[in-house]
Image (tube, rainbow, N blue to C red):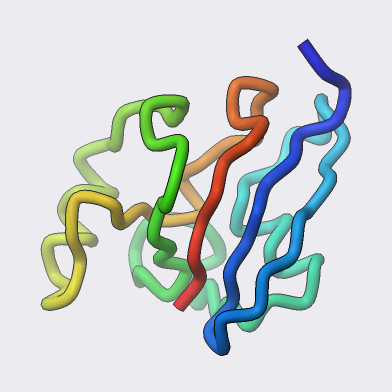
Length: 105
């Protein structure tokens, strides 16, 4: 395993940047995206109640933990959500996510 988790992020305008996150930081992907200056509202503060941190997983979906019922229910309210949609607040950073590629909305 690695002590750095690499996540490739495509922003709303198509720009691509690779984030390097130390393992053991104990944050959600939403918190890291906000700290990295991505325009993520996260209105509910990470409680899976607003879907303003929705992302699309481009690569690495199999490395993510299964979705909770709360996350599935919230994604169900979005007309354009698909099988690759996740809530960044519900993804805890873990070395298994090294190489994840996502798109933010």
